[in-house]
Amino acid sequence: MSFAAKGLIARGRRVAVVQDAIETLKLEDGKKTIADLEQLGARLTTTEKALSALNR
Image (cartoon, rainbow, N blue to C red; front, side, top):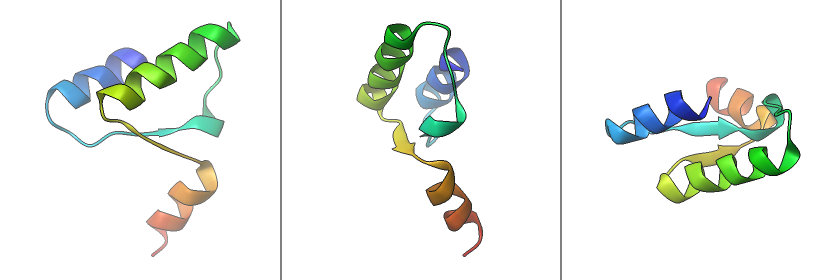
């Protein structure tokens, strides 16, 4: 997940990470990855908010 998101961010694309739709094997690694992506410009969201945005 992080390689794809980082690649999209590097290409100037807007990236939203649906936090409650992903799982990592190691909790701390997942937290660090999400923090790194947010620092790079990814927007954090939830499944509910993402679905709501699609159904406008």
